[in-house]
Length: 316
Image (cartoon, rainbow, N blue to C red):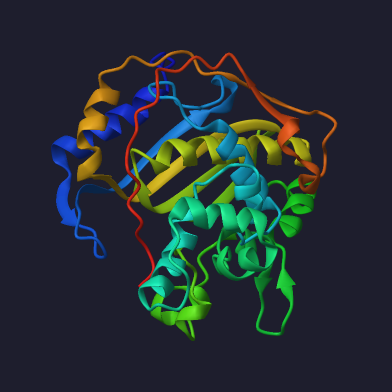
């Protein structure tokens, strides 16, 4: 018998599992308590609607702009800030804040920092840079011989011509730029990739994507990640000429921060509503041509937002 339960219950049931059975750990930078489980998987059939979670409102505009930023190979927050998307501000400000503590730069709040990134190109170039994060690894992976490897541009024509092959993997996990493996701190990524690699799979005329996420902030980050990679799957299906299949989300360390416990309890008490419909501009066939206006959702009727404080982790 087909499963008729709303697909969002996969996410809600995982939240319940973590609260009930998760091991208690502590984040190494802040010491904040988390509850954690290891090795879980959820999956969404993209023919059953677009998995933008409905038990709290998810910031879809930010998801679209961030994905476009990744696809452009960008590593500076200026594009995001210029479009009033501030989901990466914390990590850029973290470096500036350290310089403030050393009395090397003027004292400014995070809001003032973001405004300065928006207005001052030279400031943005110096302080808005996050190092070789996702987009750089996807589109401009530095090879030992000096070349830049565009993993997506390699994969797209191969998916069209040889869909049965098994090696269509894109990795953002590049040890040269992660933690103490980087030659210097200045060369390290601001945040080592949480969504570390993904793989494409074609069968029965449908393109699916499986993501491996090593570290998953289940309350704040994962709703964003689900929608982002589902959108990415739909975009890749369109540019390769296949129908969309599944988005499969595999987790390593799936956790809930202690300052989100109450919010999670509120969310799991809500009943999911129908998923919205995603509309892509059908004229766009090149992955580099997508803009914000080419991506829309219809029929999104979520429960109200539930606020939660982000925990700025990662790095040294």
